[in-house]
Length: 348
Image (cartoon, rainbow, N blue to C red; front, side):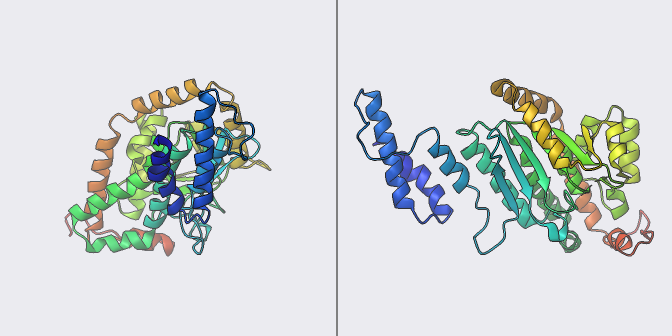
């Protein structure tokens, strides 16, 4: 009876949400498996029963495969989740919007947060995932916030935009809630909010190209966002470099990131960031799984002290910038490859 209630109220909604065509079959198979487990616990021989799903092997597979349909079949997924076929302790989370260089749109953010919640609640409790690699499809890790959407915020009130930015940040910073180490494989540039997402990961691997990490918010005409003012501080040894990077709105090369300690490894030549991240993940996956999970949560608890206050500050500061008449000038200047002509401080 307990098994029946559990399947009806917890498992079936997951299958139904993902448009499973074989709900009745899978429900029956799971019921038979659970019944067999209960009978075996009572000492009953179940060797002659019909073929059953193997509880420890098949049920985690069903959950991991069924719970990541982040969009309907007719619409391309913006976020992909896979478990490494050669090493089931490693998972891959991929931003799949290469046509706009994996820009962090609201739609992608919703899918990303949905996928992360599924990993936390449906996969990690039953699968021994020990490390996750986060990367982007195509030539970029992420180009940052969608500029058309950001331009449109000019029409909103300051308080509405502050709320919108907090929601936007949380879509992506939920990666900090995944209780296993996350490695950012920066296969290409991580700009603006994309840089914030990379900094939110526990470890980073970058390609050795000229422009790889862009914290150029002031050049765009807005305050730093996506927690970057706090997260960058956690990886830099002094405020000297932090202040210059953020105030000047610098775009750093891979070598500069490595020299400053922002990234752990640099991919060069025939190597790829994803390949090196995979090697790091393989090494970490050999560590004790309980120690690994507990330690990454201990480290984040220390690193995240003050993060929420920083997010509130950033959201309000960005919202104020969006309300100015000259909002959009910095974006246009970059697109037109010219210097921006910002209004003075006392202008509207």
